[in-house]
Image (cartoon, rainbow, N blue to C red; front, side, top):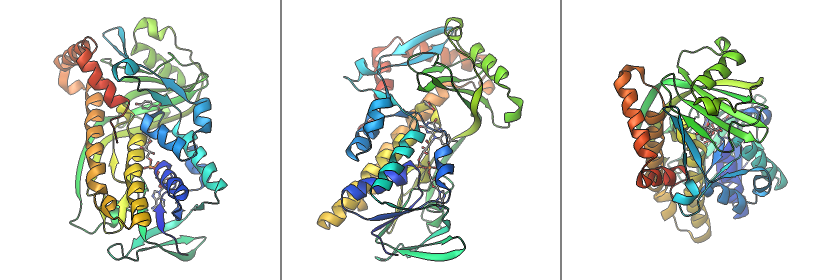
Length: 390
Ligand code: FAS
Ligand code: PHB
């Protein structure tokens, strides 16, 4: 098989890239390791920056988003038995975020690719990129035991943190930066009304808590847990009790408890690999970087990577201008590092660090008290949370 762009990974980054290339007349093939049902069963991000929602609309994938997505003009912080609202819309001259699950974004992108007869190979095993330093790279993979090959002009590795793309860079090319946090997030989905019409991020000495949602009848909650925590030790009753203890009493009183329909623990890490390209192989999304979900940046960074990479590929094919591809890594990394910093800052501010003792907790309370009483500080948080410019 021959295509112009071979894409490894059919998550949001790979699907969005394929759809944008398609509407610009560029052919691509996606090789996805899992089944479509498996990909669509993942419960992950929930908050979309305006940059991503604009890209989805431009790619012809905004209809359900505009119908079902919930636009939020603010976000709330709780600490010291208080709740304080950050007026995102007022502090950023009208910018807001949209709450719409990553699962729905992925579903909408799959539907769009199907409608355009997009080529997506599911359960593609042992995908490997070759000759990426030449003008004729190719991918091999196995499907139902048969060895197959795809010749292409460029390869985009949108294959997530555990993908093959980054591992295919020759030794000595990459520099990795990593910080692993000594806690994870235990998350549940429940068919209950959300605690608030906007998100609530909670700092408490028992640990971080997040009250989010997917719709007016579907809530998403997270609590900080130690990295070695076992899911089987968390009954729904224990989870709801912990959420309530970590919130101000008047906020906790609003919580509608109910059975969990999904429960999982995700580790937290900050990670970046540099550069994001080698020859004609490009990394986009979690393949190149990971952020702790505290800043709601993971999915949104995948979108800005796809923005830069698709622009570079379009210029290459349309005008023979390779400058966008040559500068892709540098341009994407500038925005990635700013999101890494914001995600690290939110994580350090909102989680409990027992090793820092009572003093560390008091310093966090003071920073939150300052943050929520300073227009300058809230503006800085707001412009990062709604998303810095591409
Ligand atoms: P993805 O990991 O989504 O997709 C990569 C795809 O490549 C997958 O479908 C995988 O099966 C496939 N693949 C991997 N290796 C392959 C190979 N060798 N061959 C072929 N295919 C291969 N972000 C937030 O903003 N908020 C959150 O709350 C949040 N929660 C998260 C929870 C978890 C458990 C995880 C892992 C991530 C979470 N994230 C969150 C981040 C997440 O949303 C990512 O940023 C987002 O999925 C990035 O999309 P992709 O880059 O497409 O990577
Ligand atoms: C979610 O709803 O899953 C969510 C929202 C905000 C975050 C992380 C996760 O920062």
